[in-house]
Length: 299
Image (cartoon, rainbow, N blue to C red; front, side, top):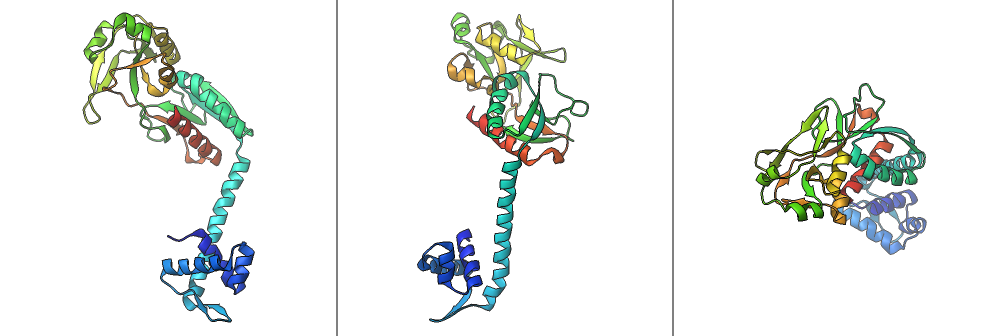
């Protein structure tokens, strides 16, 4: 494998006509410089320099390869400089929409950390479980769960393997008992989410990653159009919730909620950053994507 340091030694030696001069400029020993050239020649299976006790000159192959080595080093430096410039100039206002529970309880805190690192960035947030219309609303980025129905939009994954899980509080389990199977959901109070005036009372599960969905019709005495409230009801011991594991991660770690039927796979609900145009995926946006993806992995 070619090494950047070896290329640098080769180009500097060719420029100076001397291994010792190149070594002085690079602040390494002549022995290390000589080893770098020999290593490069070994990788290329070419003789780059013709050496005598008094002189050193490029071979014909060395002359030809020197052009490529210079261009490689130039492109690498250009890439590095572009990244550094991007780090220094990250800024601007990002208009972001996100779901209520994840937004209020996790993403807002993550954005605080991100803004502390890049203070030139401003945020304008829309937190709601209603799917934002990116064509009509002033939104640059939509953070959304699930498959995207509009194929013209661009999706960058944040948590592609995220799934829903069944949860209840220890108090609820103590009072009403654990689930032994999905059939037991029929006798439990299930906390249901409402979207666009539709109550989501049909919950899908999978015996394994290859099987088709098993749909269970659930009932309960509470439903709401705010996913954050569903989670709060579950923590309060008022019933069983079926939600994104990402939303529940802090409560599960703290013991406020426990996963029911852990061997049954919940519905896949991947998290994405959504854009209308590729032109919106700026260095600032890519840095935010990487940051949020890292936070999701740690959650």
